[in-house]
Image (cartoon, rainbow, N blue to C red; front, top):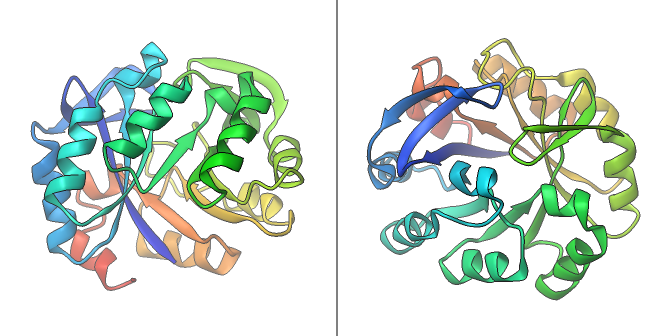
Length: 237
């Protein structure tokens, strides 16, 4: 199981939001590289780097931070936030992203998203399918829809998408446990590599997600608040 550490960037700093609310941000580190090096020093391999400025502006903003982390660490970086055009996609990969997560563009322009997946390969592109009450949310979680997240994922799976990150926004930053039942339903769809995000607060949560069949888990606030340590997480790899 992949243990992935979330590093969310806003105004150049590592922050965490609560339920995606930009008014409820908390700064944890002024230096994203310092945080990334801590992850690497503990033997962890993966980070989920989110450009929150980009998510709001619908174009990549913090690509220089991505580039710095890619050059100065050996971490495998999944980059998301603000991938709104082919230029954004190219910038992300040119700056060192291992994979890129696309959320809003996959919802607003499915044919373009599938073109990117065909060009880059299905292992390079992750579908971001984040939801509130099982309804898809986009544009940095600021826009809700009536689209059922499970049907949405199933439709994309039938078109060759296999890598998914799903965040239950209502649980994000709440440290109240992940949406296990939601993930069980998603994993009834065959052939998916599902990364769970939101609510993880303990080793037990991670064990349950592993038993559920999730390929990976993203840990964010639990790490920054000391509920989970990088040392603990490194022993799970």
